[in-house]
Image 1 (cartoon, helix red, strand yellow):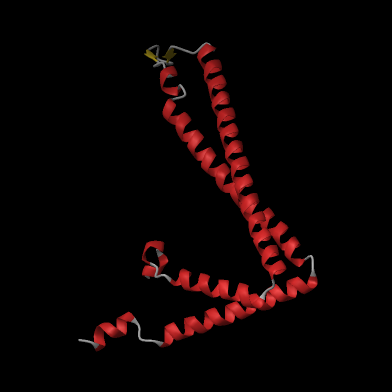
Image 2 (cartoon, one colour):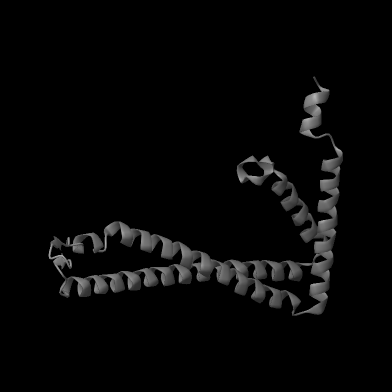
Length: 182
């Protein structure tokens, strides 16, 4: 259960990274490694560009929303509003002026800019990641022989990673150690 939070995970990623580097060095030639590095760079570049574009789009949308809210408020303020309400029995009740409560606030503007920016950043980053992955996939699958070597190296890596996982699961767990040592 503690593995669900990144702060409590063990250093397994370091082991897997080392295992992946060994497979890169032994199973692939230099041109294959260059293609993989280039493909990884494409994914990263597309995600960064998409994030920046999404952030810009979010700020632009927040600006447009703010200017629309301001225009609606100015139109509302300029129009003639009733000041009292007459009932059928002849009594009158004053209607309060709500203009100041409906004015756009700095906090509302800040929230709009924040949430539109975060939404644009997320959307742009994800779309950039998808387009970068597609571009990287095309670069890797361009040459069938290279694709086959990379797939074989990845399969061997997964086999070794699963073997390590099996060894770890077959060993004593921390829970078992707690009760057997007492």
